[in-house]
Length: 318
Image (cartoon, rainbow, N blue to C red; front, side):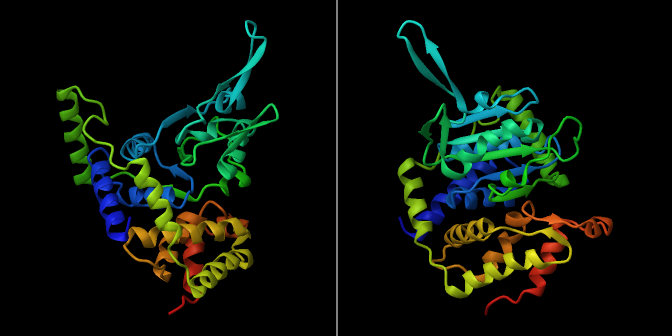
């Protein structure tokens, strides 16, 4: 697969997704970046902004096996990863696999489960392996977590630990569509009701396993020049000395950005990354990885405000 073939494949897949998901074009593009850089995504937005539909449509067009876990306060780690059950007929333990054994896992309302259950995803997200009763079980090579959370619902939620947030490549913020898009959504919903079709009834799977593997290889072959690597490192290190940030981004964050800019370059049809790629991905890749100081919160600054200031301060390579 060459870059032109890859671009054509993604364009056809993107257009297919847009049949079901309206008004979230930027989010869809970043999902493709995340997939081909082998990252995970956290979707945050008000209820009713198509977070679940995006996950379902994305798995459908990319031909990824879909699994879903509705995170609740009484959810146990074994409900996610699985459990060994004793079979009295064979006198052996049999592994009942949890929903984590899939390609795309939708962790719906992930911040409603207690930290013990949230931590069941840590090993899987980092190593694509889960350990059950001392035995390692490999997950799919395409294993990809899409987690959702609603920002306005605070009752009954648990904050995600920093170790888990750091395992998400992007935190994507969804907002309500504009007026024209919202009208189009209502018209589309009416037509689905009349035709008695589900939300995914009209979209088709596009990406084959062979094409997915070829896309991964293509992205891995995108080169990063030394000046781009230096720029990424300088930006990440700047978060550790900024007076508005109490805890800056980790080395894992720098490594995640370097993988993501390769994917973005390939999606844009280039064999090399440019500073614009880094700048386009800096906010979604770091907004969840930094902790603001009390002073920043008193001044009503957001993570995006502080990160934008850092980008203006750190010189980009020419």
